[in-house]
Amino acid sequence: MIDFDYWSPTYIAFGKGKESRTGELVRQFGGSRALLHYGGGSAIRSGLLDRVKASLSAAGIHFVELGGVKPNPRSSLVEEGVRLALAEKVDFLLAVGGGSVIDSSKAIAIGAANGGEWRKYYVGREVKVRPVIPAALPVGVVLTIAAAGSEGSTNSVINLEPENLKRGAGGNILRPKFAVMNPELTMSLPPFQTACGLADMFAHLCERYFSPTADVALTDNLCEAVMRTIVLEGAKVMANPNDYQARANVMWAGTLAHNDICGAGRVQDWASHGIEHELSALYDCAHGAGLAVVMPAWMAFVYKADSARFARFAQNVFNVGHGLFDDEAALEGIAAFRRWLKSLGLPLTFAELGAKEEDIPLLLKTLNLGANTLGAFRPLTEADVASIYHLCL
Ligand code: NZQ
Ligand code: ZN
Image (cartoon, rainbow, N blue to C red):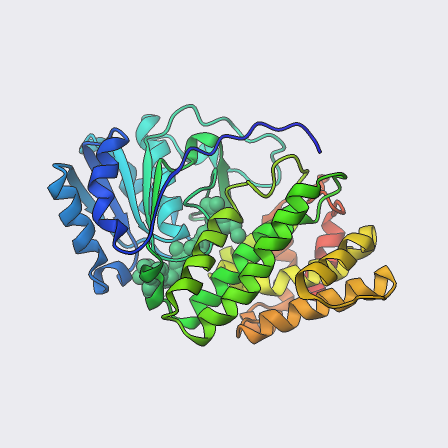
């Protein structure tokens, strides 16, 4: 295990009806003037937004609203949010939605606390050390989709216009102060969005599990347990979207997959996410759908770097490949992973995603790897990434 610092202060209010506590939580974490940020309409249609507003009013929180966050959140709305936050002198960002709304809120929180400056903290693979974010307003979350894990994470990912580059900012300062997590709120998700969420949270564990770090028994076991849970409980949710207990297990798995409890003390990979972000930037596809295409291709490309680890993944997560040589077991595990993604109705190829072979040079250009490498399990050159995009065909 390698040395680590771990600080995850997010207060979780989990269960039925917990959104009624939102106002009280904003106040508890120092807010009195909030910017209420939400997406394209699902929270309005479900009545959630009205319940949250009632809770804010009951707690005496003054608030202004900004809706319209799109999946793969855009920088133009962040700019609008920063202007509004500064003009209204808000002291708290309240995100009602999923990863896109939360990430947009985090970006506004940075801008509002740094005189409007937020964009320079969003960087790509060309930068080895992320710029330190000096300040950010506190962010609270009412989560409506189990997927990105942004409700407990240090990250924010924004689509920077006009270049259309998906870039990330990171730091403990971006961890939300609280997350309201009512599994019932996720029951209205279309099956495809539920599936994308399952793929994303599973990928967050893979990025940590496929590590070059030895002697990490505890986090190896944690990763496997959460991955198995996602597969088993995810199947229940896909079969019955109103299965509260399965929704609850999946929702908590999504947070544990990405608040780094499963990644502490390990060198992490994150190549698949880097490769995928170029796809969701260019094609505006769902991040989880892009990962369903990229992750198995990445696995097929890298497994020989440590086929024993992939054999263990096959056996302990998908219960296949027992009694085989490591290379064979590894391939069985990758095949089982593909079958699982297919069973969720997710795309597995560029064509199913709407991506095109002729765009590969553009994807490599926007990834902007240069002479750097991507990932740690098997560091990838630009030529390696090109091979992985070709395996996605
Ligand atoms: O906009 P509305 O109308 O709310 O619809 C959303 C959106 O269309 C819909 N939805 C959400 N909750 C719903 C619902 N529909 C019905 N009922 C509900 N309860 O779902 C769609 C997708 O929402 P989005 O927020 O985009 O999903 P997700 O949580 O998967 O977030 C994806 C974004 O997070 C980034 C991704 O790159 C992507 O931009 N990520 C953020 C991370 C982080 N901050 O730590 C890590 C991830 O790896 C990821 O990169
Ligand atoms: Zn992700």
